[in-house]
Image (cartoon, rainbow, N blue to C red):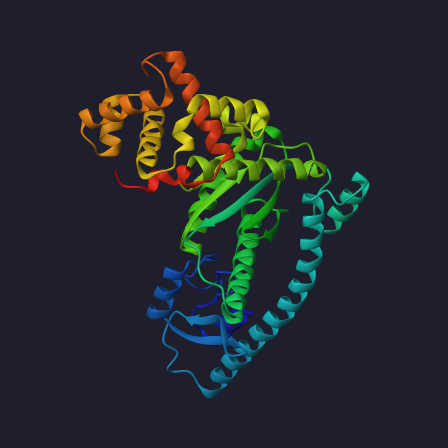
Amino acid sequence: MLNILARFLNVGVAYIDEIFGIGYGSENSSFKDTCVVPDMLSEIIKDYTHVKITNANKTIGHLVFEKEPSYLTRFADVAIREAQRALLLHFQRMEFASKVERRHKDAFIKDILYSKFKKPAEVFLQAKVHGWDPGWKLVVATIKTIEENKSTNNSTTDALRVEEEEHLLNFLNEKLNVYFPGTMATNISPYFVALIPLKEEKDYIGLCKTIEKLHDVLTRYMESDVVVSVSSAKKDLSEAPHAFSESLETLDILRRMEQKPGVYSWCDLGVEKILCALKGSEISRNFWRKTLGKLIDTKDESSLFLFQTLEALISNDWQLKQTADFLHIHYNTLKYRIKRLEDILGIDGLSEGKRRFDISLAFMLYKLENSDPLTQCSRLTP
């Protein structure tokens, strides 16, 4: 339709789809099909003549012209109005079809992730309907934005949040299928979960690198910090629940260990994976309780700072000068805190390698199992 309109007007034409964040250009225009982030959209709208496409008083896109069509006849004006109408009808038809398909696909994805199918044959039969090849291997990626909690006390705010999540899911599906054709994604609040096909297991490293590129696109589009956790490669779609569990476990470990936004793979986690197997067990609780003792039983401000000091020591490989710089405190202040830690933990010194290892292990187990104020102490200012 853009090509027909461009030939009729003798000017390059583009359509900017605000719903999916995609730009389309006619064959004779300098516009290229591309992802349109909000900043780019505002620049295009500012620099080029355009007309809006609206649906129920909401802008869904813009018809953009490379040159000012001031010379156009009334017949050209009619052509532009008909193009607006055609784009609107196309959007309404696609929106209806998309919603019906989305409901069926969402239900299917969630049934897979939560092991609702009794027979693998049912999974593969329905998967083929949604374009999934039974021969594909599987990776599950879980995406979460990191932002401050916002009040959602009224129905208007809730409605806007649901609409925003729907737009994000549409955008996510669009971009993932550009990088990984056949991907199925859904929203399981507060996460977006994608089932990504993998042709060969050896392609896993390349897939993770591609997701890192996608992470940058998502961060710009969502205007928020984003963390993506990636499961290990699974043999087929029937292992989706296990893959989903790995990706959620990775997110949980990242949250407790306070990692920065980015892309993290279950395969790249180290000792944390082993600790996950111990998490919550009687052996684990007895170990960190005995090792950390009064440090975790006393939750006053002083203990919080000492807990922070211990966390910094472990994070900086027990290097005192590096830890003091990290905490922005004097070297002697750090030595004083270490002496207090030794007194509370009931040990003679923190210089012995085995003792440091035991304390580091107990600390990691404690953080994996607890979300009390002690685990938030790194936000305090000494």
